[in-house]
Amino acid sequence: MTTCVFVQIRCKPGTTYKVAEDIALREIHSELYSTSGEWDLLVKLYIPDDRDIGHYINENLADVAGIERTLTTLTFKAF
Image (tube, rainbow, N blue to C red; front, side, top):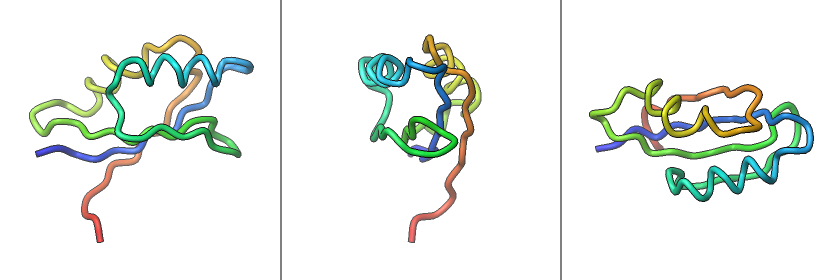
């Protein structure tokens, strides 16, 4: 089983496309979108149930150069 999470990413100015490319190359996401507003990117991830969500994001996503801040939303049930 897996846990679906959404991570919104704010990038340092001028780095959004590079950040998106680096995330895409890691092949850890289900979907990756450019967004408008306060956040620059939206990543949909499926995290294995045997992994700690915070550690997984820190080890696989948060160290991408150009990321300024993230906001993670956990999901519980799809309707």
